[in-house]
Image (cartoon, rainbow, N blue to C red):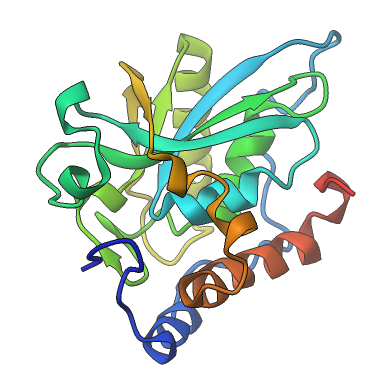
Length: 220
């Protein structure tokens, strides 16, 4: 559905799609049953997640205390296909993904997943998010370790059994093979283009929800 750099979508249509999103309010969203505790020592860990437009997921995750760096990119396919216009064909098996580098003494992998599921995207829509359709916009967790896999699968089961969403979660949990950074103009897109129509319609509602429900988790 999205073609080219400016995504060519009418603002009014975007706003209507956001308003119809079935994602439940984040207030009272359950913590993961495992892995919520912070590490006793500082360190560096990496999470790779996909949930639709990487502009939006990057914009959400970079707000969190303990997140040191977020890179937009592609995961799920090979190097030859890791280019924006090629990924946009939906035939490379890449997803628009983000690589999150974080300090586990300040934020846990489980807490990142909580924000991922409750704010960053809708995990119940298969191969699309809002106005963006295609396998490149699928919901996916690319785990780096057996522990990440275990935490992700357990949390999805917990949310489904608790009927937190009106539909089952369709998030894929798959091993990370390789993450490919996206083109430079995609990095920090929201910071560099805060008034872009796509940003206004799709990112700002997520940011508002993040500020409302998780103020203690946000950088000043």
